Length: 410
Ligand code: PLP
Image (cartoon, rainbow, N blue to C red; front, side, top):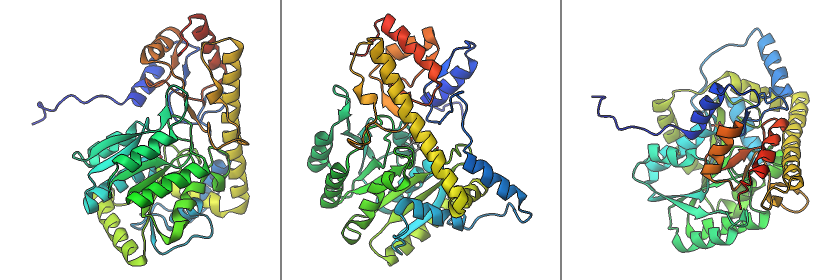
């Protein structure tokens, strides 16, 4: 039975994690994973999370009971509040706890496949490398198409290409996956005007957008600012667009291993929302029965305890601020060393636009250059040339080597 299984390709991210672990070079640097590290290249435990853990563990009533089918209720309620703000408690929205952001993406793909059999799903070019995999596994027959997003020549957002492709080539009922903020892997987000234009096309063409929200608070440090597009879609002329939000708490709470997230499905009325809920319960029962409890309690405790919420805001400022510093530092080191190319796209300028933020940037390095960087200098990037800014500061010595070897990307 099993001998005929076709060979399956390993996952790039996990291959690199293992290769990095096995590398015995002391100065090795891992710039591949989307996991926030501190200056010592250690995964950061947020002070707000530490305090919430202490509170929970001191509670004699803390138990390990199973959560209701829609998830731990307090988590679901804070997930909605973070996503849509205090004002939007619409009965036409169905919210469910999920196995982190991956689980939310997976669940909505399963759900749409089951209820609507969409013919095409549109993904940004480039996108998070798991999006195509999630859709391939949940819906092997759906056509996956890419919409233009990143202009590789100018390192800018190709908004015209994106809009015209959607207008000319997408059809009613197609699904489009958008990223709410701090786009992975490019670090480029549309401005508010551009988001409005994107929402207009979704509405006009009758597309079903999935707003993948894995980095809310990571971009500008401000949950409301980073969540602007989620609220914009939700409040547009009374449910003009049906859509979903796939939310992750892995990054903005540093809870990578706890697998906490949520799925929100925005419908036009309460009756539809009730049917969505019933179907989500069915799928979730067959897949996982119930969601993880402890991490959900950590998130809910932080958001619902004023003092911890304040601390969380500081933690978000620490993370987003450090990422901006890292961007500037890398930019300055590269330019100081006359590394070939133009590196302005690495810099964040919050006063000018909504762009160039978060954990990632495309370096423009080819796969071959990425391999040389790994083999000769023990610096690890994804094969696409995506760089995660959360490696240690020391790492940027590697760019000096790049300049010396004239391996500049342009
Ligand atoms: N969506 C995007 C765009 C991501 O970059 C990630 C993680 O890297 C996720 C979703 C899933 O995050 P998780 O499943 O770790 O919560």
